[in-house]
Length: 241
Image 1 (spheres, rainbow, N blue to C red):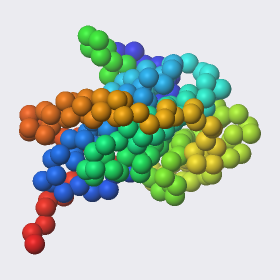
Image 2: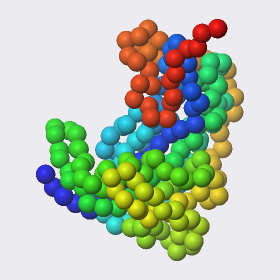
Image 3: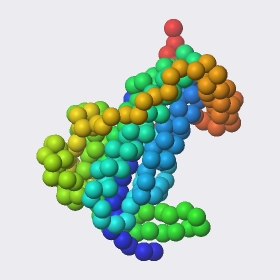
Image 4: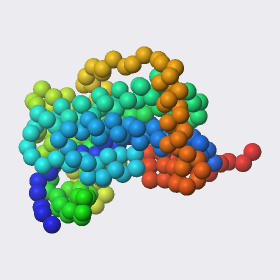
């Protein structure tokens, strides 16, 4: 088991309002929508390596010390997420809640720089250690904006001084970790321009609808439970009349 310094990053998708438990159709489409958005996030992750998919979040790590690359990589990931989200909206034909709420989906990041233990099992790399626990604790925070990068002091030090001035300090008391100094960057204020989206196309819409239904079939038929490991989708029991 090797111990190394690593930059830890979690990209977390949120924004879905609660679903009634019996709406399996909506949940199945929500499952596929998040999967498509996570694919875009992973494709844009650059030097970051995927440690694990965690429901509606992706946990990444990077070994090395490239300050400029961190800010640029986060910007690239967010740009890819927003571009895929807008394309899903343009191609949307279904009117279920899982599809109609796509425009409300957001992406937030938490980042920490620390020591982690790497344990490789076949083709998988498991990360362990207190710093891994801390970055996951950071997902539950008091940041007052919907899309942000929440970071600890070591990550803040990686930022360009001009970008550092755009951050806001916010102390947290993370469970089991004690008081921790953090800083957040409001992505709504520093977001860069997005690539121009493709225009509407009926053949593309029909293909998107067909592939959505095929990919969702195992969830609709009950072979797999949709959204069961999503931390940002609240599933509640149906209420009686």
